Image (tube, rainbow, N blue to C red; front, side, top):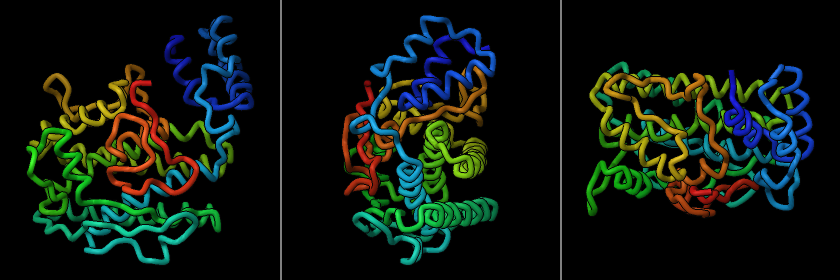
Length: 314
């Protein structure tokens, strides 16, 4: 069963305000989490142990969905360029906030039919994710922010040690490069939805988020498997270590091999997938371990309320 450390982590990720904490404690009691002692229950009622956003107001479902939409704009454009040679259509990128263009991006000359088929299917899924979030949000949907798929991949590859200073990494130059770029995104997408799920109040949105999380996990497992079969474990593991460093080495990441064996499913000692807070996700996409509101894949930052990364060491 779950120990105190696991439950405390679950609470800290799930409860952002007093109302959430109350709901969680009632749910925990109903589920029979008797390992939560009186001292821990008392600490759960203390607001100071929770990360607060802004003036302490609850994070709205709209803010969470817009955060996800920003991430989906990046993924959808990445796969659309790789498969079709172009990004999202203009009518799928409008909304509130500063609209931005995509720099970089071109069609990948796939040489393996199965990889091309995988990429085509994932591109369709990501296109549908963008459409879903935009429909759910309606007039409050944020527009596509500026996205960099050129210098950002070079910086990420250098951080992982895949290239040396002065070299460039064109993620669209080959299907092997494409797979490494896909690996960078897919695991982050899974942990983003896992971390955001406890914050969503509307059950319809939560159900959809759970479905999208499952799809992202299928994507991630496919990419991890193909990379393993093609001898890409060392590079993937280096990317995983770089992501870990951006998050302050909190053990939220795993490569595709561990102790010389395949590790297609990254999970903790309970067989549970890792989750990241919005701040931790932004540390990765901004390519910085410190607090920032722009950088990396989003040179002008994200649109919406959740746009500032956390300090990875906190």
